[in-house]
Image (cartoon, rainbow over all chains, first blue to last red; front, top):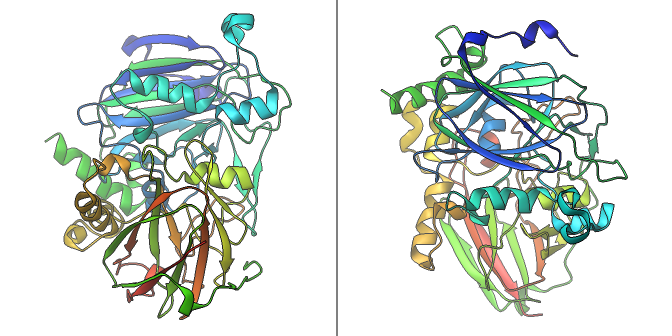
Length: 246
Length: 215
């Protein structure tokens, strides 16, 4: 699904845009009331992503609370990402892809070497092979954070389904060129990401894909917002969030 | 689904350590490489929220994602290698008379209780409170930062092919157990779950027993 109608926003409110190449890592502050659009520029991207309360980085995205509160194992439009303190870090106000993975985790150096072989910087310069774990640790380190803070992450644009026996299946072709997800930030949030491939990606080659980031002033979720009202749990999490900013 | 059940070859009389953990209490102990750790569900349907840390360097800890993506299956049972955030084997499940265990459902906290049930549920006892008290007592510098995605032994959190996730009645019964061999020196941190608002403990939290055998 690639709904171009979904791609419109009030460009007078635009803040910045940036391309992140495949295999790279990035971090930045997204303030409450701003939306970050992540676009799968060429199709088949994976974005391993984590969120931290910018003012108190001990508060962070919590996979289990996000899934339990919304009775889902994946994320799409209408869902929100909970912190471990019962608040909404961001809500998914738009999504043309339909399924973003929450359970696959990140790749690591050993996994990348096993799947793709080795390509060191000295020979390959900036085409060298990177992995999700080291990439996220690298960005976290810029904020005084480290391995202790690297918790279960999102993988935007990737789909891992689970059969009745619990077997995990990576679904190829889940995201097509131009697919996008809008993350509307309800708290001042440190966003940390890596564009390395998903750990369960079946592609035989190291071929991480680029993404585009676009930020604009959107405002926060209003009283009639579908993310807020998709379940009573989300309403209560928004109440907790708004109390903090009261 | 319940996989093949595997019984232990170890006799209870040979255990070098036995301790009953009451409902709602934490438990923390170092387990040496080669030792066997058993968690016994004494009265049935009791969720046991569990984390592991490398005793040598607690920054290396149990990692739910590495554990499940390396085995390609979200449930833990006999044969599952519990992996660290460095993707190294920490423990291996060697016996399991329950059949499968959850590692996606996380631990309850005062704050998540406000979201999941009602704002007034904040003051009920929770696993995170137990974890934090145990870490404070252990006093080696570990704190809330060290609480990551845990294992829920004996808990049933099925994921459907369509991506649904629910908490279901437990599949454990009185006397069922899970047993692991430590593949490195580890610290085990347990919260014997006090949750009263969902069926993970059959609405009636009960004691469990921790047993350890020498290698």
